[in-house]
Length: 103
Image 1: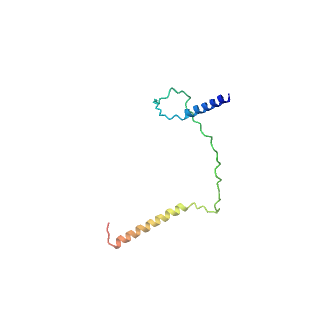
Image 2: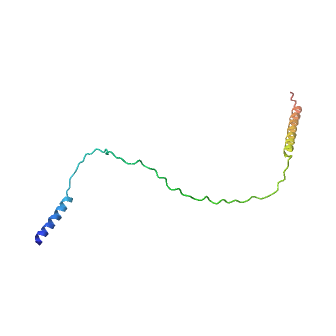
Image 3: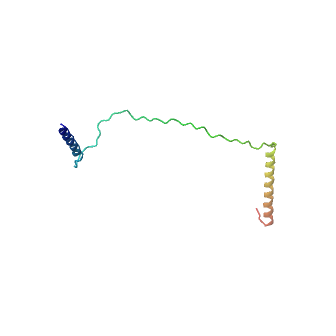
């Protein structure tokens, strides 16, 4: 009985070895068209929002000073520009008279 069991084990082992040791070339021809596939449409899942607090804002107050209000600065500026224009015209006329230019 032991001999029969031992022969059976050796035969099974040789059968297992011969199945893995087959060296052959196999050729298969197939058409790569899938069959009908039905499934739900793809769904986009947005990632969870990430909250980051804004960086702290450093506020440094500027120097505090008193600036007097002058309601007549526009009038003085206008008079000053008129004076500059009169002086420019006077210089041009004096130059033209001195060098003999005539209108």
